Structures are given as structure tokens and as C-alpha cells.
Image (cartoon, rainbow, N blue to C red; front, side, top):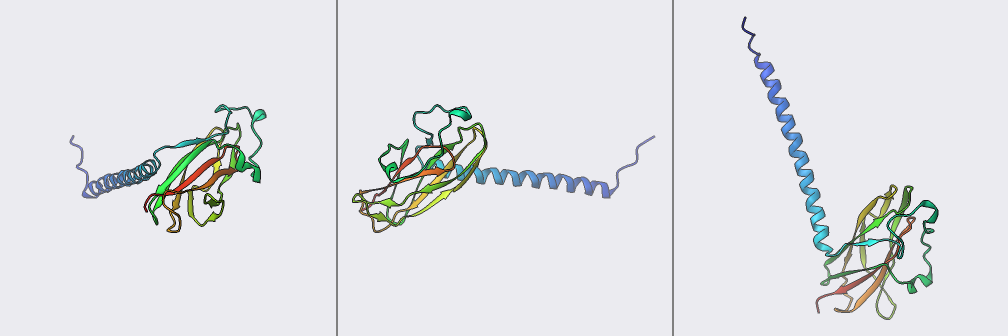
Length: 186
């Protein structure tokens, strides 16, 4: 005996299910494409990604030998930085860089990325608009994250002159990154 032919309602239901699946995967494709574009922009803007780790320490530690959280003090300016991040661009442009923060502890840790004020060669503060993404970090044990740092190059800085700052993460044992902001046009 021949099976009954499906009704038009069943055909419509199957078509709507297929359309919904196609829409779902199109949305995922768009999401991945946007994410890859953002990652590519960060990588192109920051030719060198540096690791923000405590100098002289291996990548893994037991909880017992982990360093105490970083205490920022006036004499920290004399301590050598673990890395140097150079941000360059013409006046008014956003100079960008990136670095990796790794939680070397065996337990979760949270912290805040702090950018100290930029200073000219004479030590005077320079007003620089800085954006950190993400600015608060919540890392599981042994997890890491890439942090993007963007600074708008002020019109007031002299081209070719280094303006210095430091970046640190309060709450996560890590090193300090020295940051140089340099205007490239005359």
C-alpha cells in the first residue's frame, strides 16, 4: 500500500525549519567575521604583542611561591619594566598597542589595568586620552587575556619626543610595562 503524500502544511513546516537553520548559521558566520576583524585590527595596530609577566619568574608557579600583589610606589619608577610598548601616530590619531596578561596563580584572580599619567622628558604630566580594553580582568587559574591600549596623540606634544608612562595590573601578580607615546608628524 502506498504511503500518504505529506500535506502542504508539513512541507511549509520543513521549509521554515531549514530557513531558521540557515539564518542561525548566517548569524554565527557574521559574528565570527566581526570578531576576526576586531582581532585583526588589534594585531595590525600592535605589531608586537608582549607578555606582561613578572620578570625572572617562569610561566607557572605553585600558589606558595607566587609573588605578592604589586604595590605601586614612588620608587617603582626606578625599577626596570618587563617590556616596552611604543605607541606612535600623528597628532589627533589613535595610537594602539596590545599586551598579554597572564594569571600565573593556581587560583582565579581579578584586577584592574592602571595606566599612570604620561610625562614629558622634564617629568611634567601630559594630558593623554587613554582607552584600555578590557580594563577590568577576571582570570581563572593559568588563564590569560590580550589587553588593548589606545591613546589619542595630543596636538600639544612635540613630534619625535618620547612621553613616558607605565601600565600595571592591580590585583594580579604581574610585571610593569613601560609605555612610550611618540608623535610622528612635525
